[in-house]
Length: 268
Ligand code: SF4
Image (tube, protein in one colour):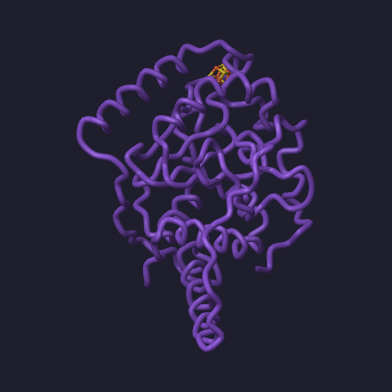
């Protein structure tokens, strides 16, 4: 892996940190080395990276428009009950005054996508567009996230997307620890209800609040665990818009997620 140990994002979301994890990092299953297939593996990885860049519209490629359907993680009454419980939480958030962020909100931003999924993305908090529309990741960063999701083989609405805080922080600043802690009142049951097979934490703030940032050293690309659910921390799409050279390590992180889920990126 060629991830930069000291990238600018090491300081993204530089507000004081919240609680740190005392749990050991999640360790994905080992895969036996096969020297005879090493060259084929390198070629395959290179092809996948080109497809990833093509999907994101990088390297001069147009963005891909197709995506495979997502897997469901539950069915029947269980899903309807989960949707109903999430709706109760969403309604409660809409009138929440647990922290000062409610004073500046236009709309609360609870989630988008389907809770009947094996994959959840958690971001930091709503921006201007999200605050206006009441949906997470609908601006430019959201469009990039949609292309990342498509590159993984999921439909845009085949995953579940939410944020650490449900109301927009002023000037799009990182949520304060007190605000994140107040909004855990919603995030914790939200993730417990969906209980995906994997969570992708988008940016350091999300990773810290899911308690998967180690006390020192690199945080991106290292499996953690939140309440028994594997968590992959990676860079936020907004950061990738400013620093597209970090698309490659993010794609490596997402490939690790696909591997955990026994899925493969679609060939294009
Ligand atoms: Fe309530 Fe969360 Fe909004 Fe704060 S950010 S007012 S805790 S919904």
